[in-house]
Image (cartoon, rainbow, N blue to C red; front, side, top):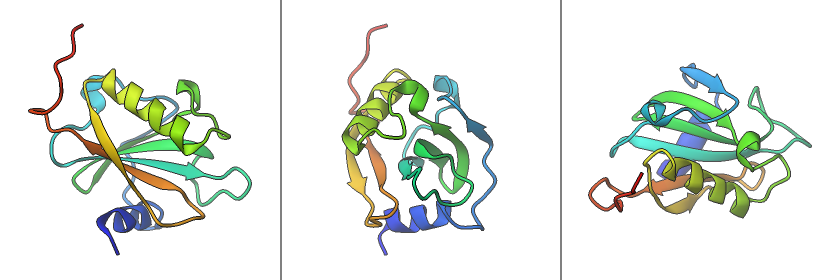
Length: 132
């Protein structure tokens, strides 16, 4: 089992930790984990056959190490329940960039019933400076 598959299995398990906050939208920059231990998972919960108590559609889950920080639905940011993975990834890249976090690429989970993607983040040394 890959690290991504293990994280996805843990997020979907009854033993997963309580979230610090469930959100409708993404938090401001100070509420976003950073550094080597930061993990962002983009997860799709099909409205036709939802799993668990997760919101339907696309959600972004933020972790720092093994601590879940928040889970946010992406419908208010442009990735509604019927959006495809490409659109949802673009929304995540844009919204994280707005918060000073650069996505370098994606790792794809293997569960066909629950599409999941883990954002590969640029290290702060690699991230281009953004003018404000």
